[in-house]
Each structure stands twice: as structure tokens, then as C-alpha cells.
Length: 113
Length: 112
Image 1 (cartoon, helix red, strand yellow):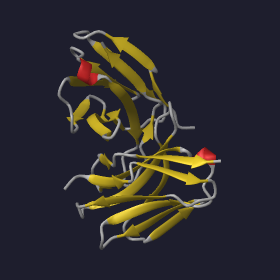
Image 2 (image 1 turned 135 degrees about the horizontal axis):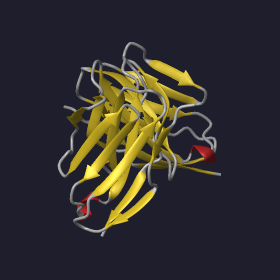
Image 3 (image 1 turned 120 degrees about the horizontal axis):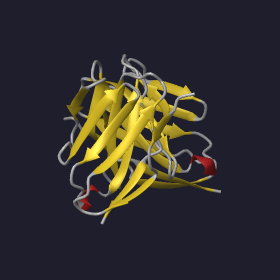
Image 4 (image 1 turned 180 degrees about the horizontal axis):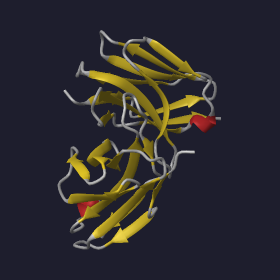
């Protein structure tokens, strides 16, 4: 069965802190994604990685960075958290190929105070 | 051009009703249209998907209707049940790219 796990379900951080969100998939997928989900805005792509050590900016990369040192793990880093980064963060993975499905993790709800 | 416009934002139907959620797009290069279902506290899960070479696809009680000339597609849920209460997202992607463009979501509530 497909499994995407995220390190935390809920996280509370202070403004200016460095925040790490971890995502692990066990399906040997090449592609991994980080989205943020906000009411009325749907899912917006922050960064994606199409292979180990490869990354590309999504639609809203400002204030974020990512790391993919191993195929199964994709980390999202908030270098200096701000209150406008309070959101639900979703990780997804998929196999390379036409029409392949994106599988999502359960999400991390981040509150920045 | 890259947007997918989804409506309505929220929908309430009685059990057994047929809720319809609509999505519209501009970019004719989109060639894959999945629908995702998300329950509270969970990540989105793929429900059903369609390519533009077919006008309709059914999986169980869920049907996608696709109108290529109007650049619109919609999700119909037959005989809706309270367990279908969730947020539904449409999406679109371009062949050879990794990106999905998501609609803004529809919160569906099915009353018992």
C-alpha cells in the first residue's frame, strides 16, 4: 500500500525560528512535492523535486528552501518562520510518467506565533 | 492561463441527492484532469481522473463529465451519502510536466 508520512501533524513555532518539515515515502517514487493549503486558495506548489538532489521552484517558493539527499525523503525548510507561513503543509510523491497519480501525506498544520 | 476555476465554494445536499462540482480552465495544453477528495485531518486522495479524449468517466457513484470545447469538467456524485461529506479539489496538468494546478476546493456536506 502507498504510504507518504510527514514528521509532525501539528507544530507551533515562534517568529524567526528555523523550521524543518520532513516527508518520507516508501514507494520508490522519483518525484516529490511540497504544497501549502489555505482556505479559499486551494493547494499551491512551493517546491518539487524530480529526482535526488534535484529541485525546482513552484509557484510560491519565497521564504522556503528544500533538501532531497535521499530518494525517499524530501524536507521543507523555513529559514526564518513568519506569521504568514501559518498554514497546512502537504507533501506528495508520484512516479515519473504520463498520468501518474500524486499521493499525499496527512499534512502538517504549522502555527507561527 | 494557468488557473483552474472551481465552483461552488460550498455545497449542501440531502442524502440521495446528486451534487455537481464544476471546474473551468483556459490552457488547452492541459491533458490530465484528476479529482481529489479530502476528509478533515487527512491529505487529499485521488478519486477519479479523466483525459480530454473521453467525454465521461464513471467509477462507482462518481462521474466526471468533460466538455473539451467549453474547457470545462465536472464531478457528479450519484446517490450521495453522509460519508461523502468532504472537500473536493479538481486539478489539471500538462503532459510531460510534474505540476498539477489545483482548483480552490468545494466543501460538500451531505445531510442524513
